[in-house]
Structures are given as C-alpha cells and as structure tokens.
Amino acid sequence: MLTKVVAFQARMGQTLSLAEKIHIFKQRPDFVCLPEYCLLDDSVGDYRTAALRKREYIEYLIRLSDELSTCLIAGTVAEAVDDRLYNACYVINRGMPIGRYRKRYPVPGELSEGISPGEKGLVLEVEGIRISVLICGDIFYRDLYDEARRERVDIVFVPTTSPYRPADSTSARRERDRKYFFALAQRSVAYVVKVCGVGKIFGRPLQGRSLIAAPWDFVSQVDFSSQSEKRILTETLDISELREFREKLERRKPVIRDQVGSLSSQII
Image (cartoon, rainbow, N blue to C red; front, side):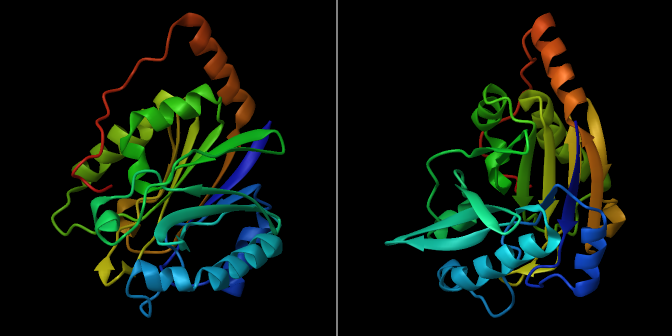
C-alpha cells in the first residue's frame, strides 16, 4: 500500500498561490500537511486576536482541502473555548473536517500567553491508513510516541514552528533532528512528517527544517541552506513496508527505547 504525502514548508501568514495549488494538485497527494500557526500574519499580535479569526481560517482550510482533493493536516489555529485558548490542528478530508487535535504540551511562550494544554490524542483512519497528529513541542514527550505505537499509527504528522538561531550550526541542527524526529520515528515505529513555517511569528524569525523520517532512516529533508525559503517535500511512502518492519520488530524483540527527555529547554 502506497500513499503520497506533501509537506508544505509555507511562509507564515500567506495563503497558497494558484501556482502552488496547481503544483500540489497535479501530484495527486493523499495527505498534505501545513505548518503550525500557518495563517498568522503581521496583523495578528497575540493568540487571543488569532482566535477571533478562527472561523475565517477554518473556512479557508476547508476550501483548500476541497480544491486540492486531499486529506489536509491543516497546520494549527488558535481557538477560544469559554475562557481558555488552545492550539488546535484540524484534519480535513476533501472538504470535510474529520478530526481535531489540541496541543497537549504548549511551549513556555504559549503557556505564558494563555494557551492551555489539550487533554487527549487523535488517531484517525483515512482510506486504510492510520494517522495521528502531534504539534511542535509535543515531540519532547516519549509517552505520546508510545501512544502512537500502541495505536499502530502509520504516519505521525507534526506541524511545527522553529525559531531562527543565528549562531546555530549545521551539526547542531542535524543532531536535534536525529535526537527528536528520527529517534522518535524509531520509537513509534511510524513515519514522522515534520512541517515547519518560514518567515516570522509575532515578529520573531523562524527557520524551516521540514523533514520526513521512517524508523530506519530519513526519507526526505529540506536542505539547511533553504531553511528560510518556502519548499514542498513530496514523498511516496510504502505503508506495507512499514507494517512489515513493525511486525518483524515485534516478533524479534521489544522496541529499543531511545533516550528522549521531557520538555527540553531547547525549542525545536
């Protein structure tokens, strides 16, 4: 069983151009994933203001999923419920919302600005493929990847924003990708699709290090020289191969537990 996945490293606050939509549509992807907070532009100064525009954002994302004729992991939006704010990812299958995941481990900056933790995970089956969603700092928590493994998830999508660090070396970036995303693909025994935004969020610059990882290796990565540019990663993932790998691993021995800490002071 093959499935085509598009990871769109988008510029924050920009909707897709006609050319970008045509380019993605022609590839006939089964899944398209956008970055965390992807629609926030310079006019939005805080999460509560962003939450006031949730309906506008969701209506656009529903149209986009329909136009692309795909299952859209629709980045994230801020949403308000009573006096609480959440960072939420909607999954929209060909114009129909089918699930919502709220980030369970907001990073310190979000917590200080009122974003509350979500309470439960999300696992969906789309045309026979089991998917789940984590958001950015969620990946620092091993229990969430253990959860994905128990649920026999095939693909974990991770919408992300990653702050730009002027002094960051290529080796340091590569090490973080291996420590978290590749190691956690191994731990969950699933494909991991990390999708970053580029540009700025609330005036703070970002870097894009989008990637797709399998339990045995990286499948695709945006080149570090392109971390400030929009990029589209497209890969055909072999779900049957992944499931065979998982079954062989389970027959031979328990999955080796990688040493991944709880919430790191390092933001991805």
